Structures are given as structure tokens and as C-alpha cells.
Image (cartoon, rainbow, N blue to C red; front, side, top):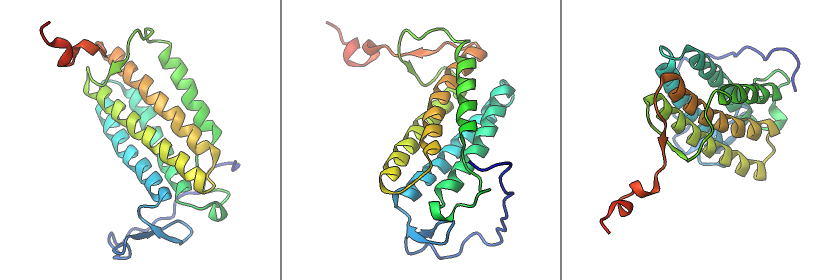
Length: 205
């Protein structure tokens, strides 16, 4: 684990298109050319997708639930750090390069425990809905699970830090708790799964 703060980013985006990806390849942080559908690219691309959805949930929560919005904003920075380390092969990682550490995992665990303590025990599975924010957080949860599955697949092929999978696993749990907490804080009932609400369950006997 790196000591102290991470290096500040050194980025200069003067041109948006370069034409270098027109052959279906892109480059990692170390300069290696890899196929755009490789597991590593799929993995950090899904983390990027997740970050976009977290941004939507952050905007939605800003006015009614600023405490949650602040947490989600922090998670956006953490996901970008996660993408940085996934875009870098182990031999190219700089000691002060942005990454995910156990501190981020532990912070999520603390927030899960604290917010879950305010919620009633579940007596049924829940469905996304009740509020827009709840649905957006459930979308974040499912994308996070996909990122986690891709990270597991990548770890079978290449070396990645163990904290990557730990963080994604904990984060998906956090999204579930945050989705429930959002409806609780907004005073909106949860949408419970009722098997007989399906078309077959409503047919006349």
C-alpha cells in the first residue's frame, strides 16, 4: 500500500480523437496495445460505466439527501482511482499511483453498518423503485456486480490487486443498503416482491 497521498494527475487533453483506436485496439497506462474487448478493458470500461450511473444518482440525491450525495461523490473519485489501477499492468504501477486500498473498503463497511442500522429487517426481496433515486442506486448495484464478475475473470488471467474485488463486492452491498436507506429517508415505501403479481398469478382460477 502506498504511503501518503497519491500523485496529482498530469493530464493534457488537447485532442479528443486520435484515430489510433480505429483498428480495435487501445493502449494501457504502460503503453501496451491491447484489444478493446479484452477482459481488462471490459473491466475498467464497466467501472467507467458505473461511475456515470453514480453521477446520476449523485445529482438526484443532491437536494433531498446531501449526506448521501457527498458519499456518492467520494465513490466517483474512488472508482476513477480503481480504473487507474485496472488500466495499469502490475509491472508499470507507480508507488504513488491512484488506487483502491483497504481504507476505502473499510469506509464502505462502516457506512453500510451505520445506514443499515436505521432500516427495518427485510421480510421479502425488494424490487427497484418507489423513488427515482432508489431505482438509480439499484442500477448502480447491478453494474457494480458486473464489474466485480469481470474483475474475477481478469484475476484468473492476470495479476490485479486483491482490494479491487473486495471494493467492488463491498460497493455493490453498499448500493443495496443506500437504495433502501434512500426510500426510508424520503418516506417512500419499498417495493416488495410479490410472486403472484405476475400475469400467471393473477389469472382466474
